[in-house]
Image 1 (tube, one colour):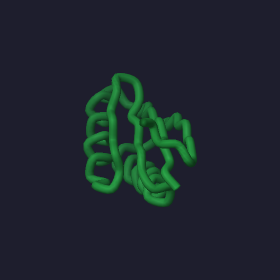
Image 2 (cartoon, rainbow, N blue to C red):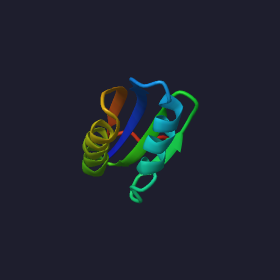
Image 3 (spheres, rainbow, N blue to C red):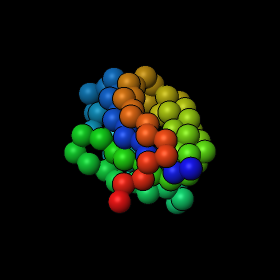
Image 4 (cartoon, rainbow, N blue to C red):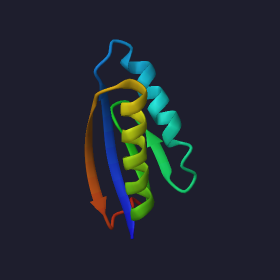
Length: 82
């Protein structure tokens, strides 16, 4: 099943733009996922399990590297834009 996720990251630090860019750069390392960065959110598209694994790993990475952040997501299982 294909899943689409829209995610926005809000780090609790002053240099938040650098952290968001680093987060998006790390998302691009997931070769099996389509990553589309926009001005206010990033969209991930791929196999459901791979998308969920990515989200789990990236939130853990973000917390270990930068501390607390808020992540706002919309998850659409079974949906791939045409």
